[in-house]
Length: 451
Image (cartoon, rainbow, N blue to C red; front, side):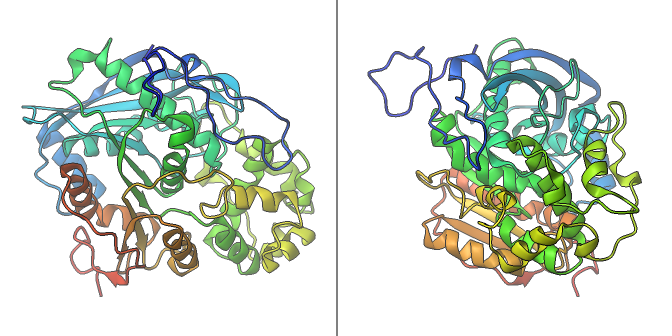
């Protein structure tokens, strides 16, 4: 098991376990205590993905399929492994899975930088785990590895891609769950590459880490950064990239409850899953339960539907207003922004970055990326929260890709993201602007897309 060091505690023996100080048990949850660091973060198993031992030219072909401009020719090949590790959820020991992607080829003179990569929404049950996917799931970790990064990419707690199934529900946008699972994945991934799989990587790794996430993973990245002093104080974060993050859930849910949008259905899904994590079993206080869909009764079955197939895209419902999905009292409180009116409001605030009860202890350089025409994470709705974060001392740069939708913003800005990451890794002088950027044509935008 990886030996963990206590931050700022030179008089404590190196093998002394760290007891997490992360505040837990919010929103009238049943009380629990987190396990110490000696009980989690250990690698349990690993195996190679045989179809992801890629030459640079093979990665270039993948880059072409994904449609990312400006990244070819890549610097390195990539090899991808799946791994299993120990973690915890609400104080109970769990096993979770993820991917490791390492660059192949002549190593640089300096150690390889390490990226903790946090993926976007994939689903809510094991069949949707990215490591179970034979193509799309490993592609982005391989792409990052081809740029010269060692990549540790957790599936998230509740999304087991191999071995025994999950014993805890995956709850998108619950900051505590994803932060704990991500830091334990980082601990286990580093231990694996320094131990049983040391021969996989030619060269050594840096001791610090970059957090990178997109969409749901952007939210995960900022909460993983926030939780670091309280759960993984031995980690040295050099930079954070959060692409299209829903860092203010309050603004998203308020808009989703007021006007029908792309966020309306996904807000209902995410909140229902939050309810299962926080122990709220009565979905009739959130969702309607009327013909023809009976959302309060049917949605839990959808969220844990098929153990063998991830089929969210096959679900079709014909609704066109928030009133058809959300319960009357929840709609009223959400539209007013009265988050104290229902328990659901506590879930929303606890997982909004500027409102959460997790105390901020220090800041790391952070890049926020938005898409001008993102109809899911609408940039103007996030701007007030960004201003509040800057006022609270968060050091940020922002980038807003002109004419980009939700997924496009991440892909089209990858050249800028990688350059910004390398500048932080190299220690280049940096003065955070903390200004919400106006739309500009991103470097990876396909020809003709920027109007």
